[in-house]
Length: 141
Image 1: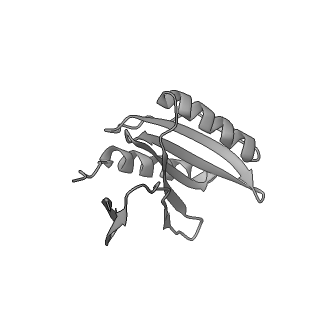
Image 2: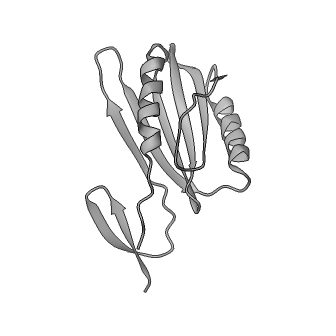
Image 3: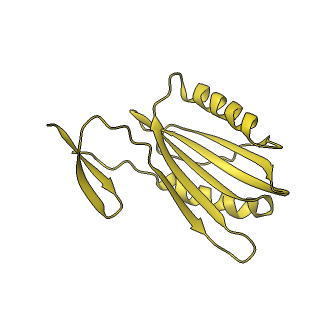
């Protein structure tokens, strides 16, 4: 049986080949006035160019988020092909701000979604500008 060595933080396990990785990881930075969070979600590679994928993804977000409003995208250097979508939406009477970084990993997609209350936009943008340029793909052997 063919196996794949799967890495998840401190865990390494050999799994039978053929699975689809749909892992979701959420990291939070709690603060007294409302924190920030970052979600990583792996997904199969979608058909079309990366800008086409981003356009479809943005349309899906607009259809599901109340009060959706796209904001001007921030400029971030990244060593991988990427698209950035910045947006606001309303939930439970509060306005939220998110930065969605769509990364093309070649064989799959990685969605890096950063979020906070809208008044924390500057802090969130700065966190994205610090983290995204450091994205590296681990070499698989």
